[in-house]
Amino acid sequence: MARIAVIGAGMGAMAAAARLAVAGHRVAVYERTETYGGAVRRLERDGFAFDTGPGLLTLPAVYRDLFVKTGKEPLESVVDLVQVDPSTRHVFADGTEADLPNASRAGVVSALDAALGSDAGARWGDFLVRAREAWDRTRRPLLEEPLWPNWSVLADREPYPSVPHKKLLRTRRAGTLAEVGAWELRDPRLVALLESHALAYGLDPRVAPASAAVLPYMEHAFGTWYVRGGMRELARAVYERCVARRVEFHFGVEVTRVLEKDGRAAGLELADGTVAEAEFVVAGVAPEVLSRCVRGTAVREDGGVPPLSGLPSRITVLVALRGGRPEGAAHRTVVHAQDRERELELLFGSSWGLDARPTLTVLRPDDPGVVPGPDHEAITLTATVPAHADRDRPASEVYDDHADALITAAERAVPDIRERLLWREVRVPADIADATGAEGGAVPAPALAAAEGRLLHPANTTGLPGLFTVGGWSHPGGGLPHAGMSGALVAGLIVEGPEFRGSQ
Ligand SMILES: Cc1cc2nc3c(=O)[nH]c(=O)nc-3n(C[C@H](O)[C@H](O)[C@H](O)COP(=O)(O)OP(=O)(O)OC[C@H]3O[C@@H](n4cnc5c(N)ncnc54)[C@H](O)[C@@H]3O)c2cc1C
Image (cartoon, rainbow, N blue to C red; front, side, top):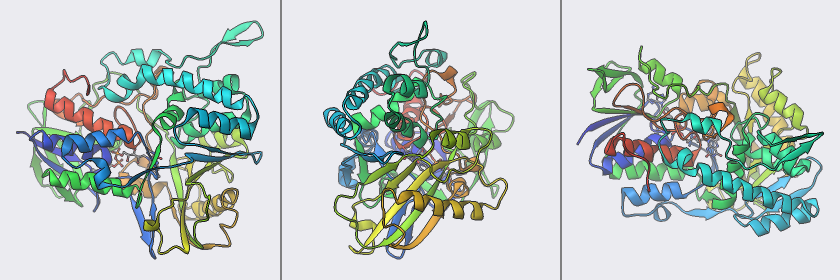
């Protein structure tokens, strides 16, 4: 039995902690805030409850596996998981609307044919077949296995089987997601549908590799799920599983240093000078936080996976409404940007700023647990924003104006949102930075192949023996399922050693 000290109580860190405790280790988690879950928080006010982090779950299998491996009670008996159907209602810039059913290729094809005209559905359906091939080729190395020592093969090879595209006398193949859209999907609404998946993870479709096709594929193939009561319930369940397995939690304690002895990680030093000795340290924090804790030591042994920088953040507007949720409301509506070029330039270009008509996600859960009564509705609006959009004006002013713009944009999904408004609260990048410790409130994306490795994340092992990294900032990257998988990988690497090659 080894002592294991975990930095941070985010989802990746807790997933590792529960698994390590079940393997017989003594695990203690040190969290700088007063609560668990990291980005997965809830705002409660006047009987309303809102997720301020992720609102939906994809790939629930990752958490099912965590609960099976760490105890007798399966995930479904500790949280109420429901499939969201339709998976998404899309409101396109030209006013066309399409409801896409959950996890049904035939259903999605006919919904797109009906909404966008014949052939659109078939083109999207054919794209999903190619996206599946990219998924089959990358699922193990990019989700279920530790980062390969020869990771550069993942950086060089594009797993998406793009369709040859003839232009003038040349034949080309899509290398970016935007090229997949322009050359294979062609309809601007299908392009918006495709690119909205990249934007939701903070990725620029113009430079994201074609392999980002796995993002819509994952949702399509494994469904979109809601946890009744809100996503915070999933964090609660993982925390309670940790506690049941005797993981010790210390809240309100900031880790300031990883101790080293004889060239190995030997424990932690906390802000008050207290020392916690351990044989292994697992860090579930952003890279800049870890670099501050590991002085003068190369924390990464991947030998070259470039650091992810300049990733955007999110703005979330939590809207309390009078009047019940109407029949036929979709759980999730994506209101597409009015002007794609402008949105991308403001988000990722040199003239960055806030777009008043961005790609906006509107969540309207059908859940009595998040409202004071049947005559009320709780709606969450989320958009991707640059991590430092508040550079020139006070954040409160910038985002307050922007929240109003987003409510106006949301009228395309909820026409009476203003008349019914009781109050609204805004969560900005600085709030995300408070919850997670990541600079500028940056949110990491899942690891993707190709693009010269720019979207791979550093390995879970580091240059300091005994120190491991977990969560969205390390392999296999950000998002609830990926962070959950990183917990399984780190537990495997500690329990089975460097030969561990992933769960079978
Ligand atoms: C607004 C928003 C929307 C999102 N939407 C989605 C979505 O739709 N789908 C999806 O899959 N994912 C989404 N995500 C991302 C997802 O929430 C995260 O990738 C996931 O929760 C994994 O988190 P993590 O394990 O990296 O830990 P984090 O959530 O980053 O938590 C890190 C923890 O470490 C603690 N910590 C930091 N420094 C120290 C220190 N020095 N000492 C002690 N503790 C420290 C922090 O306080 C925090 O608790 C969203 C995130 C945000 C913020």
